[in-house]
Image 1 (cartoon, one colour):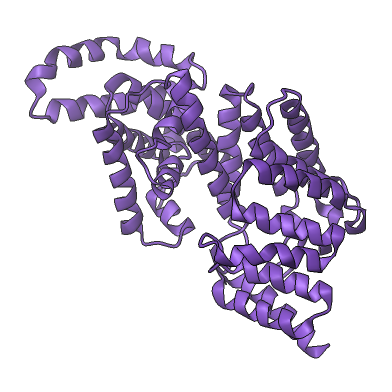
Image 2 (spheres, one colour; image 1 turned 120 degrees about the vertical axis):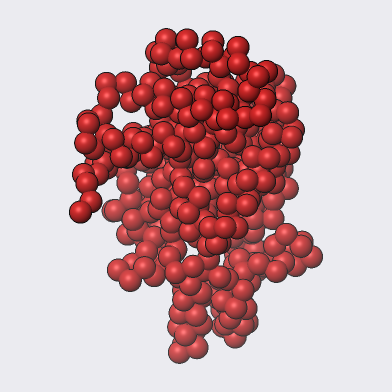
Length: 415
């Protein structure tokens, strides 16, 4: 027989406490990899003991205490124990008071972890994986499942990332203001990637991976809690909320993709839209406009239109024109072409797609022929649209997107 288990609220609390506890342990012992292992052991202890003994009054302090004891055991087992004996003794003497003191700290440890996980020494994929493990509290198996790779592959990726941090000599402390400004862009980009993969899965049977999208929003809130004065931090959180608000309308009863212009807007999450607009307004008022704020503004224009035909496409086009000037991103150019087509006609949009055929970042992806097929359909060129939809379907690894594209082929073929 299995014993009692934690309820959902306790599991959520544990996940939220992971970065704070890990940060406290790293701050004390200065060893990322060992601290991460110790915190995982503390979590296992919590899952085992709390259902039987009840949750402690100070869950965070309890976890820090247990993880710190694991670290002390680890230190004592090291060959260099002789050189650390004094430090170990001091840590053992001050362990309980330190845990109480750590409890009074704010979210700075979480923020420091973000900067460590998004260090320039790491690749984007490693940074995403390490962020989800260290800050998000996801297990290696959960991360591997989310990205459709074997658990052993993901374990190696995370291990290499932690080793890169160790060899780079990164200290557990907030970077200087100059370094923070440089690394914050990486932090936000990692969160953006996690959210996008959750909102529109790049492969597999489901259009959305809700656990990833929700985790990205939760982590973005954690960064916002420490850096609410930064307009791009605020803008990214606003963008996530304004986009996630449409989640329930994006798929049909059988998981099929429903494009934006055909969605039932009555099921959009109005609370998320209101919060997103409030955040966006606060960000724009600071007068330092960045790409996440502009994307959030575009999302807001879509969300505020009660019907598809009420969408203010000229305003969206103006926003994409601004975004193009500050972002050399082919996806921006792709979406800009759609906005141009909606305002000035599909042929104008098709002309803008031509240069993207020579852009290696997007030329082989499915989105370029998918957009071209859509604009050709708008222009009445049915045969050319069918060919582009077929090409896009052959390139995508997302089953819902492939099914949608082949449905468009079937509709045009019947017509």
